[in-house]
Amino acid sequence: MAKGKGRGFQLPAGGRLGGMAEQLRKLQADMLAAQEALGEETVEASAGGGAVKVVMNGHLRLVSLSIDPEAVNPEDVEMLQDLIIAAVNEAIEKAQNLAAERMSSFTAGLKIPGLF
Image 1: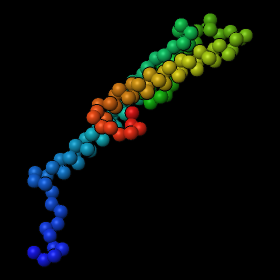
Image 2 (image 1 turned 30 degrees about the vertical axis):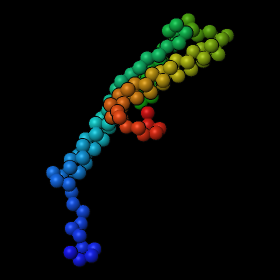
Image 3 (image 1 turned 60 degrees about the vertical axis):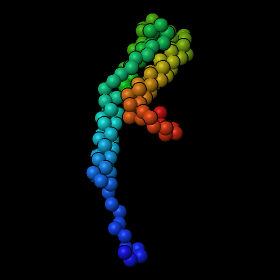
Image 4 (image 1 turned 180 degrees about the horizontal axis):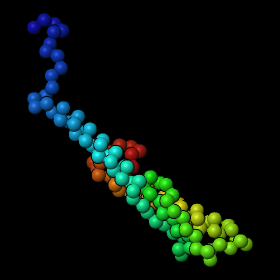
């Protein structure tokens, strides 16, 4: 055989690379579907013994906010603001945990820095 004239790149027997590419495409599609489904899932958080309730979806979008009328005191607006902030922050944390839980099956065994 002349120098530099090899048989070129060959796929492994059984076309394993083609199968791997198909598996990667399926994984990508499954991950996209799981991410989209998070938009349909919600978490609820509250503060002040339920005086402020927040519902957030898995995309970190605020879905609803309810405030008990008894929590509305014109002379203490700061307390109500603090309750809203606490409830929203708790909902964000719960939604992030939900997303991490749903996506963990796709990253199981992978050690990618900064990913979940």
